[in-house]
Length: 201
Ligand SMILES: [Zn+2]
Image (cartoon, rainbow, N blue to C red; front, side):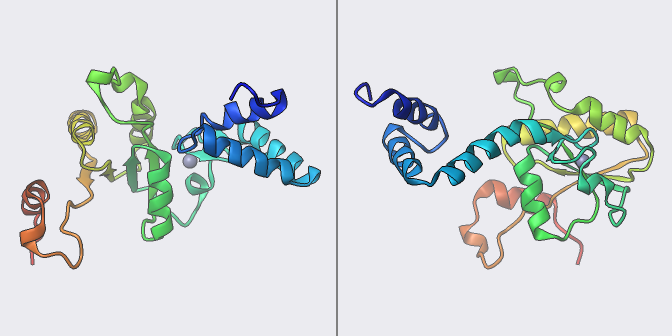
């Protein structure tokens, strides 16, 4: 995009680095922005600056929030006895949209992946230990998914809690057969886990 006028090129180059936007769609977006009235464009610019200046990581749960501690950590209507561990903040958003969980959270900031040099020191393990040391948590719920990294992380956390916080029970989301699915169409790993975590009737 050498031939673009410099101010336009500057915006296109930045937009093109966003996930899902290549140079062509970045150009389309930039041309659209050019049509916006000045106040609207200024508001967009300001909201991008605000992202960096007014958004915090909560000291207690490590989630993104405009207050610290965040509104979930300070909500008196939620239980301190259940602590759910998620890998990333977007998992928390999805769970909150469901509205059925009334405990607290901790955002790990990723999953263990030794091959990519993600080890426990890079995750929020120290913060998790602090939360458990406070003594209020009775159950740690792992909501990490079912990838190999998720399994490795779940095993690491389970071993740590059993060793250092034996009074805390560790559970995980049930692995399951989707509603409305027939057993014959379920993949083998899902079936294996469904059997392993079967429920008493
Ligand atoms: Zn929080």
